[in-house]
Amino acid sequence: MRIMFLSIILAITCLSPSIMYPCTTFCFWEEDAWVFGRNYDWSIEDCMIMINKRGVQKTAFTRDNPATWTSRYGSITFNQYGREFPLGGMNEAGLVIECMWLEGAEYPPADTRYGLSELQWVQYQLDMHKTVEQIIQSDTEARITRQNSVPLHFLACDRSGHAAVIEFLEGKMAAYTKEDLPTSALTNHTYEYSLEFLGECNGSETESSFATADYSLKRFVWAAHGVTSWDANADTSAVGYAFEILEKTAVDFTMFRVVYDVGNNLIYFMNRSNPRIRSIKFDEFDLSCTQPVKVLDISTGEGGDVTSLFTDYSFEANYDLITRAYAGTSFLQTFSEETRRTVAAYPATTECQDK
Image 1 (cartoon, rainbow, N blue to C red):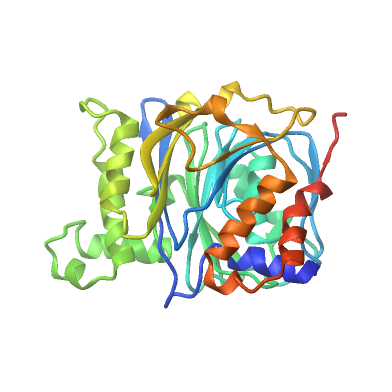
Image 2 (cartoon, one colour):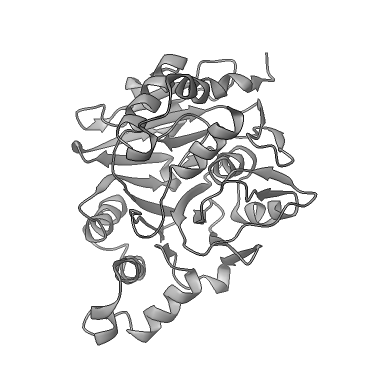
């Protein structure tokens, strides 16, 4: 049952290129902080926004030399297939990380480093680090396991002013940051290849190379152009401008959009069935693990601030999310109720160390 659960978690974010649904991420600098945008493109929009606590001891869900750690930072994450395995999020230190599909990504072989699944690797980074440099340095201690893994790459930014694309190619981490990150955008090709295409078409939609390119490369060009074209003196707010880029790069099956306003500790989002933009005030949550974890269904709210609408986490809420997500995901529909309950019960294996 444990291995079955791991396989499910690792398979849910993306599928093979023939049936995968692409996504877009980017970030641009606004005065003294990043604004980070993310389109999530998939077959279902079921998602729970979760408040993760500091001071929680966790053991990675893998048999491949599992990592054990105690969270240093609280975070807000977007979870589609259960708590502790986020698609992305932001922590209280201002670190943002989101995952993207990357065909050809290759994680390291088993070695003495501790192992994590790729989605739990996202939570681990948000739990433990406050800068992208620390994410990069963590590769000396922890790795994404190859066991039942799917290929992803990541865009991250932090409050110190740095951003990074992190990929795993030929079994090693490839990190692009500072002067190696001329544009902070990412879609579904390697960052290097995307940059080469951006130069080939001169960032212009009128070039013949752009017309014949696949949609991932086109979205990269649009996102890169949006990042470099931001004007702090424009009438549009930075958050509003980020949503404009997300609109430009959206597809018919974009299920939700997220904008992280890192400087103001605010998160904005909208989803397919509830397109009203809503906001979350990070600073209003008690991140101590002695207090209940709070959650919010992504479709909740009439618009505006929804911070007060979060409710206490429960096994039942997690199980309901998993049940809805599995029911809407063709390759998960046949999994038994026992399996779904095992997935929903996983957070009970974590323990608050501040009691």
